[in-house]
Image (cartoon, rainbow over all chains, first blue to last red):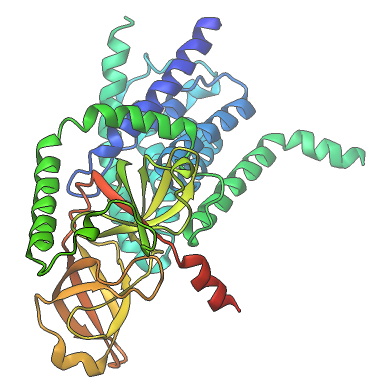
Amino acid sequence: MNNVISIHAVRFVILILTQVLIFNQINFLGYINPYPYILFILLYPVKNNRMLFIFLSFLLGLTIDLFMDSGGIHAAGSVLVAYTRPLFLKSSFGTVYEYQSIKFNTVEFGSKLNYIAILTAVHHLVLFSLEIFSVSKIILILQKALFSSIFTILLCVLLTIIFSRNKT
Amino acid sequence: MQQIINFIIRNKTFLLFLLLFSVALLFTIQSHSYHKSKFINSANFFTGGIYNSINNISSYLNLNSQNRMLAEENNRLKSIMYNTPERDSSFLDSLKFNSLYRFTHARVIKNSYSLNNNVLLVNKGENDSIREDFGVISSLGIVGIINKTSNNYATVISILNTTSQISAKLKNTNHFGTLIWNSNSPEIMQLIDIPKAAESYLTIGDTIITSGRSSIFPKGVLVGAIQDFRLDDAENYFTLSVKLFNDMTNLEHVYIIENMDKPEITDLLNE
């Protein structure tokens, strides 16, 4: 149990630091940045206290906001996907989720990709609509959300593959 | 009463979500109104310290280009200084008693230009008597306005921020307008509300400078060059695209300007 907690604590800190110091500086084509810190939300154990999970996600988002001077946009996005995560889990993994026995290392790749993609897309849509905060710029919101989502999904899949190989 | 408690216990997850989500929304809305972001800013011991220690390392990477920029500025200032006829040697005195503006040198330790509301972080704060609403310029032009300060750090609302509005004017005449950013490109800003009467003075490539009306920036700080101009929808005012002299994506050494007469000016305006 201690081991699980320390893994998630370390992941929390490392994801924030890499996000702030590396991924925010990429600015691909001028404005496209990935946000792979949501890996924390993606990979958080399913069988766990939900209130603690939502609170930790809020803390994660707020810390990113603190670094980026962006108000509360990351906190809002993170809390929303953390709260609605059971929906995404159910739609992607179906029966496996019903028995609460998901191990993210062992599920098949297709449904995992599906899960990551939906969660990332929702998170980024909330994130950019709050960042731009204007209905008249909806095209810009969708464009930014789409490009950043692609980047984030790619990075999340790569990172999960790289770090799951070590354990087996 | 029993039912209310039951309801809270049954829906505690949803209520927690609602609470945290509205707190996040509150912070977001605050950050969208100018000078209102109270709690969430990077000018604190924790984030400032991390950015500072990383910047100590990464500043070596562009030492070359920054040195060249500083040398060019020195060159320009020297040429102004030695070409002024009849120099009075008392000007070289480093003690200043009656100067209107006080300059403080600072380093940008966090730059940002890809968001809609960009905020920079500099490594000078209240210990160096930096306060809210001081102007920030680089050797090439304006950078932004100080927003929040802590003991050792201060956040700067970049000119690349949709909430920032700075008074600027044409260099040759006194027609002034408001400098805003439409968040499309970090090189181009918009100067709106230039009166229609200024048409004959508008030439592509002309210089735009600050107007000195706001008591934040002195008059004559460089902004950029006119790239394009057109009448707005009501056909009463011109909207100018201004190409910034400053490369906002490559900032390191900046100067913070304090207007020593500012308390007097604001007092006078508030009366």
